[in-house]
Length: 203
Length: 203
Image (cartoon, rainbow over all chains, first blue to last red; front, side):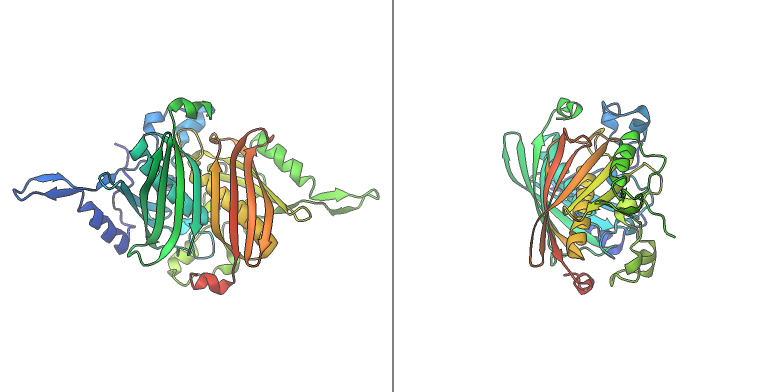
């Protein structure tokens, strides 16, 4: 079994655990009769290889294919880089991500790199768009950075569907402190639905 | 002496080396009299620690401070992640970056993660803005992704000054194939000039 990176590990701080428990407890609820049933949130597992497509990539040498790793999950040292977990709420067409930023993500001194923040925004909005529309590619990311994120802290990403038009899925995403009091960034994102042939042809 | 990551290593492919030589040869030119003088391009060194600010970061524990590494340079294995070098041309207010994308940067199967591309765009435009305006923070990145970048390939990022208005520096950036024939992305970016106190206060 491949490792599921979205499960708690020893590097997760108290804020990360508190937020995880908050959403995880809503993934399964107990009825009055004591039976368990699906809740409104669902945790998404996360792996560091695209197993399904392991033979893809027309341009890749065999060496690169077998070594390829998902950008956000290529560091195995717990807590060093991206620690995150995604939950989706299909009913409300929302997706949240709890993200603890490790010491290898530095940009401005003591703070998270703008590219690392963009990476998490792309991950969360892209995953959300895929849940809503099937396979997609990022077409536009328009990110307004409002306040820097201190290295080591835990933040909340909230993604919501703006609209769908043909092949286009428009998503909005806010990054805030876990209590919602501080706004770190606001993003509008556009994704285009694709077929596997789009990708293999590099279109 | 800290390692300068922007110098060639054994992982650099022929395209990366050819482009490096192209710009590097224009960093120093010989006069008719055989004397060496500065050319129009200048190579920027690149380190994985912000030595100058090593004591910064109000929110950081001592452990995180001493372990913090620049996001784009935290993998020491040559060729595995971001291999890149920046050259600036002060006369023309341009900056170029040659970027070879390693196997750990995967997003869509066989292609570079949108967040890794955003990371390089932020790095190049942010460095360019700093050269032009002194210390800055990213305020906006608006990235249009036109075609995916195959994992393992080398691309060119070209950054140019759009305009300066007070604290604001507007930069444009194109990512293309090294011969310029294929457009991968177009970006407009906005940076705000800051003082160190802005950063320490988290504004």
